[in-house]
Length: 160
Length: 160
DNA sequence: GCGTATTTGGCATGAAATGCCAGAGAAATT
DNA sequence: AATTTCTCTGGCATTTCATGCCAAATACGC
Image (cartoon, rainbow over all chains, first blue to last red; front, side, top):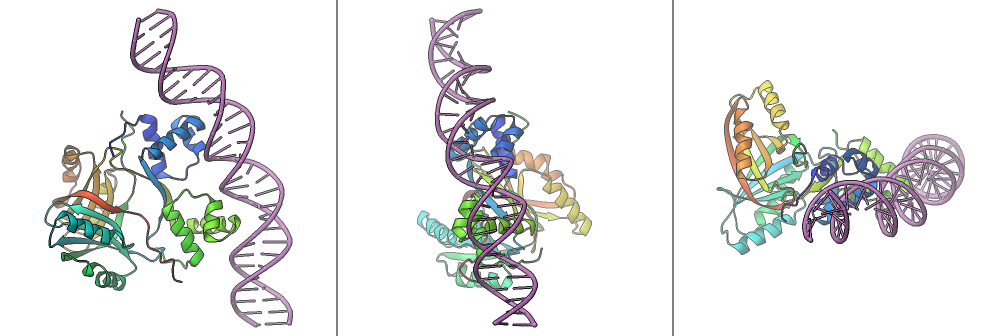
């Protein structure tokens, strides 16, 4: 995905939709200083270009009973292409895994997992993660508190 | 936020809106097996109860020119209540910081930061993070690839 | 079996999304 | 500087949707 050229209006649109993905097109148009028609056309273009991936509802982890966030550092035995691919496919299939990154440094992967409690986390480890082939070591760190969580990327709407 | 009691239809609604926050109420109602009126009422209740935090558009980091994700482990000099509060407030104000967690273990905080490139990251470090008071050490790990990234919490819609 | 409370479904109204077309603005060419 | 061309914008008409209200149905307790 190449970086797309975005003008000031595009960035305003993206900023507004990052903050509220359910803004009506009429209100969005007002905020960015366009009439509804061209505003909607820009939004559609941004969607088709893949700048806007998708729209989602963000839930409260506590309210749905998944208050525990765990970060897991994982090291593999072998790091060949096919080893990585197999591991990634397996881990991506677990709904408990919200984020997974291939990392530089001494640890190969970093995962964020959401579970109901420690017992559920232990169950996840025992029945899923530790059974994945090629895993050399697993290191869990628990989040005591989510200080900040946002999906809003800083688009620097002040400049060109 | 206490965990709220959600029935099977609520979980279907939440799952659908986690996948597509812009579903029309008419289509959402069809999917969960209700008519539009009670479906909308449930959605409003979930919003008011705080189960649904908000709706957002998710952007492609590469497309908006912020392809670099960095995880930063931070250790503070002192961990008194007011020290933590001050650090958290400062770090939360940085738009580059997408996630921040207070952690167990040897490191106090874990941050995820998005930047345009290494130069921008260095600028963030020098002008912002290293100038925050009370920071004992900073350890950066770069993500080579985002293997999985989702906000969809697993709600186990199969069971009660 | 009966009464109560909660939830659902349908209808009416007002607002919004969306496609179409003409007009305005910007850029390139001569 | 004038003209041509291309791109983007704004307004209108149609269709779809959101939303509030009320009656009916379902679940629950007695």
